[in-house]
Image (cartoon, rainbow, N blue to C red):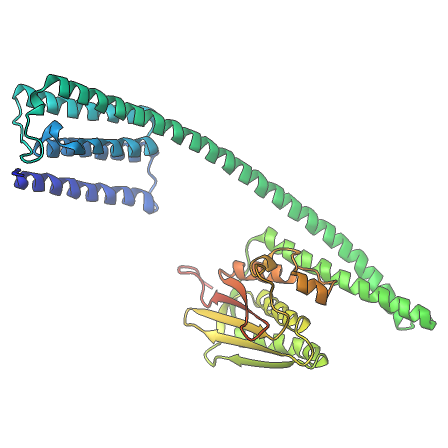
Length: 409
C-alpha cells in the first residue's frame, strides 16, 4: 500500500515523545516526596488521552480514514479512561473521540480533507458512501459510550468492594489488637499465679516444709513438672503476644558468634542426655550484625531444642551459619522424624503441630516455631523448613546483616 510514510512516522514520533514526557512528569509528582492533588494528576491524564486521540485521528487520516479498521483501537482509550478517571471525565473523553473521528470522516467525505486510499485493501471509495459512513459512525459512537458505561459501572462496584474490604480489614486488625492486649493481660496474671504455685511446690519438693512420703513425693514432682510446663507455655505466649503488639524491635550491632555459642551451650546438655551428636560450622567472617540479640538467640535456641526433641536417641544434628555478604543464612539440620507432606508452611502457625510431632511429645506448646517466625519477620528475614533426602529435616532462616539504607544503628 502506498501511504505517506514520512507523515506517519512524524506523528508516531510526536506520540512517543510527549507520552514519555508526561510519564516522567507523573512519576515526578507521584513517586517522590512531592505533594500533588488528585485533580492535577487527573488533568495531566486527561490532557495525555486527549492528545493521544488527536494524534491517532491524524494517523487514521493518513492511513485510510474510515476504511482503516484500526479506528476500533479508540476503545482501548475508553477502557483506560473509565478505570482511572471519573465517569463524567470518561464521557467527556468519549465525546471528544466521537468529535475527532466524526469530523475526520465528514471532512474527508465532503472533500475538505484529502482521502488516502488503502490501495490493495480498501479501494471501493467507501468514504463517499453515506450509508456506510453513517452506519459505521453510529456503531463507533454507541460502542464508545457503552464501553464507558460498562467499565465505569464495573469500576465503581470494584471500588465499593475494595472500600468494604479495607474497612473489614481495619476492623479485623483492631479486633486482633484488642485480642492480643487481652491475651497479654490474661497470661501475665496467670503467670503470676503459676509462679506462686511453682514456688510453693518447689519448697515442698525440697523438703523445706517437712519430709514427704514416697507417694507424696511422686505427686508433688508430677504437679511441679506440670506447673513448669504450664509456665513455659504462658511465657512463650506472653513473648509472642508482646512481639505482635509491639510491631517494632529495638535493634543494635551485636556479636552474632557469641550469641550462637551461647545457644549451643544451652542445648548441649539436653542433647547429651539423648546421646545426640551435635556439630556446627560457623564462617570465620561471621562477626557483628544488626538485630536484637536476645530475640535472635531465642529463635536459634527454639530451633535447636526442637531438633533435640524430635531426633531419636543416637541421632545427629548440625548447625551451619553462612556469611552471604549482605545476609546471614542459618541452618539447623537433624536426623529426626521429618515433616509430613504439606506441613512445611503450617508448622509456623500458632499452636499448629504436625501429627508425628504430637505422637512424639503431647505436651508441647506449639508456639516455638511461631516465635521463630515472628522474630525473623521483625528482622526483615525469611524462615522455611524442608525434609532431608536422607531423613530428618532442616530449618533455615536468612536475615540481613546491616540496617536498612538510610537507617542508623
